[in-house]
Image (cartoon, rainbow, N blue to C red):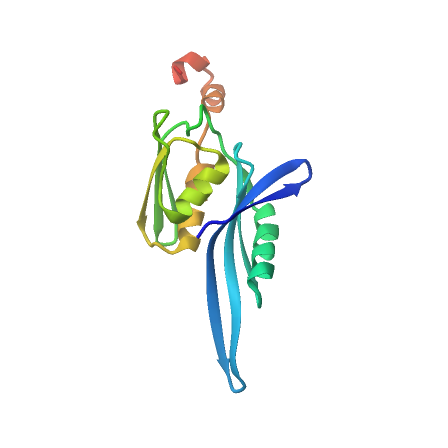
Length: 170
């Protein structure tokens, strides 16, 4: 369940992807009250991604609240030649996300919530595996955790105080 819309925020245009919508029912003396929670991932497909959760009585309002929340949780991810610089594992609660670079032409091999996050970042070739919990909330957060742990070769070379060619030969 992934819908794509364009959202413009202060000179950066984001695409939003709806990862999951849940209908929540609250039973009271007067009957049932329905509300919705929506997980939304936004990204500019050039290394910036964010996720958000919105809750409301209507789906459209929940999605809009999710987009507003996602704008507050943006992270920058290094993307080199359409893939990630190195393999990385991310964890959130019971979910584990494992991502690793792939050769050009492989495509995004990932399922559901992970695919939405990786495509929003702008990664074209990656291998991904989700282990443990399949809860979309946890999988999205574990994937974002793995992406935030990534370091580009330029930063690593600078931290180590060595030439770029000793760290990265691509």
